[in-house]
Image (cartoon, rainbow, N blue to C red; front, side, top):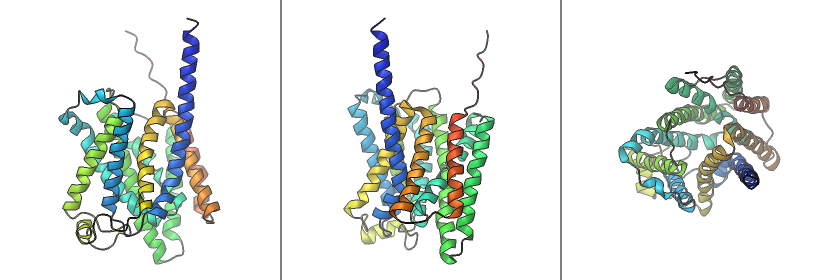
Length: 335
């Protein structure tokens, strides 16, 4: 007995240390991702190719992590029909979501992108309720209203600023695609949760399934002529540009940096959820938002718009409040 308690404390200490490390990594990834995409992805890069390569990186990275943790036994019970039911639809939605995010990246400043992207918390809560009947606590509902208010502040500022056509493009080519992507993110998250309800599935294997199906969807969409060319969103279809210019048109060695960081972010999310839980994951995201704001205002010398400055603390408080106020557990039934 005396040996068991110190051992348990040692394991808890290791888990806590791992949680802190992956929270810090997730915050860094979340904060730097919009900047890396803006700096290292040329405007001529073909969006579907960029997303396809990102999904391939996630697939192989998850496979490497699966092998490193000696968890390859999960392949033994794998069934195609079961995989299609649980991962194919979320993967298709996720592919469209990623294309919309690539459209939004070059048309929004870094802080606005990260703040508006948090509206996916609202869509996730809505779809989880509609599909699974999972309710929110009163304080969580308040947090969602605060989130909507912050998103409305930023959207209104983007649509009504005084930059004429540039401002209108920022709204329609930046804010609108990002908000649609956030809705799709909530739907895919709810579908994934519904598919995995009551089952213990290896997170790395599920990441591989999502990435694999996403690549198939992207390949099919490109072959069908879906996609409008470049990161700027104008020109020929992606298939025509690939045939004319090659799939790696506009790429440099540095284009691989945001791809790898994005793929690592998927791993970090799983680890934070496993070792820290959803509440502390929310805090990591808040830290990422603050990091983005710091980088934009200090490193790049960009001042924050008034609406963004007001929305930032509102959204940060909403995320923290939502994570800290779960609905009360149902009382156990007395038989």
